Length: 280
Image (cartoon, rainbow, N blue to C red; front, side):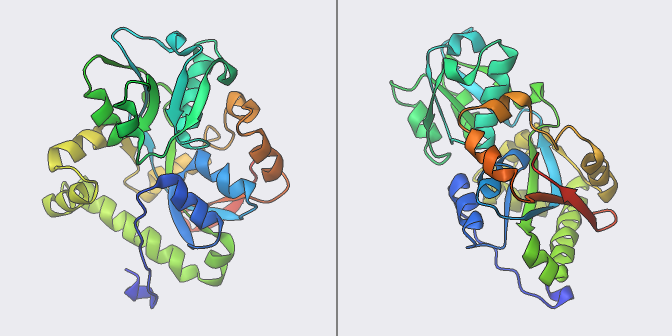
């Protein structure tokens, strides 16, 4: 797809999610895959003008808050340490869950933990609660006497997976946007058709087998066509993060800095048009 537009795209895999966003924010990469909430914190706080080129899916159970012990509930988190990648979508999910349980972030202690280390951390005796996404979440949930007390299926449409690019880079290289969106929807066509070769390749890249990958897909609401992506981009639910997240002491500084710059725009793939999307 890139050669069709006469450009070359170098794809780099980083096994630390937050570090990939940090490097994008620092200008080491022209684009990065991340969720809407993460685009509205770390890059926003760094003043990076970003365009959400692809709104690919939303989490419908792919993210969860887990605790050791049977029959646990969100209220049991009060006074506990919760391990998660700080300022990430996992942090957002925790705040949303606490809000629904009548609690606040101040009622727990967040311990910053890389997504690459979250499974091993949960395996230690000192860690009783964590927030993770798949495939790590599936591994943790498979631990005996573990309860998932909250999941992204309870806040549908809020945790959106995106491909974002630096707005200036996209402006100077419009072919980049065409190549990335073209490749994305080409792959969506193969996935919708249940192409075995494509699915097996993606399963291997995800560190699992086909059955494990398909289990993840069941908790992911994919947007297979430009039309469904367009409809999502018109919804307001993802544009304004919940009030609890905006009030969170962890993100207060991010929002204060984000409000001083044009941070996030949406490139609607159906018409390849874009409009301003301020972080406020």
